Image 1 (cartoon, rainbow, N blue to C red):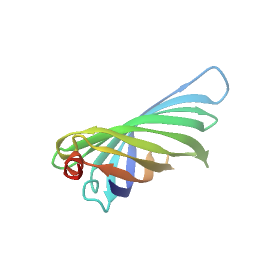
Image 2: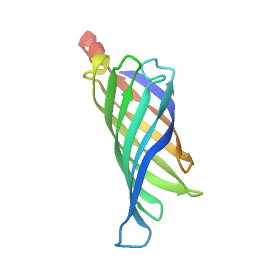
Image 3: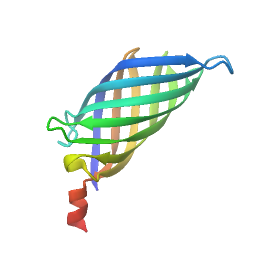
Image 4: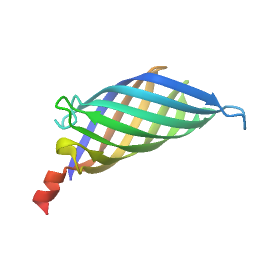
Length: 145
């Protein structure tokens, strides 16, 4: 398995929120975020990341679940799922959680991997994140096996 770490800067492209009438301050939010990754690992550096997240919040705290996809300049992709705990600091959300690779195309076909991440809103529409984890490409698995 290879170690992976990096950062991401993104912008909310679309967002919808619904107030849940069961208790005050309960909201369900759906958002699409897109941006670019930075990493010392060339497999992730400058990859375009898009993720879709659903947050279930009460007074700015709760959970977030979602899906991500990374697209490289050559068209190769990897994708997966994530989940985390949401808190609000000075009116801006932060999320800390875990992610899991679930698939890919090209050299990322058969990828496995997992890790942790932390995101924070830097404005009402902008996101910064850091992540670390491990991954293994199918070609590396075949050579090791």
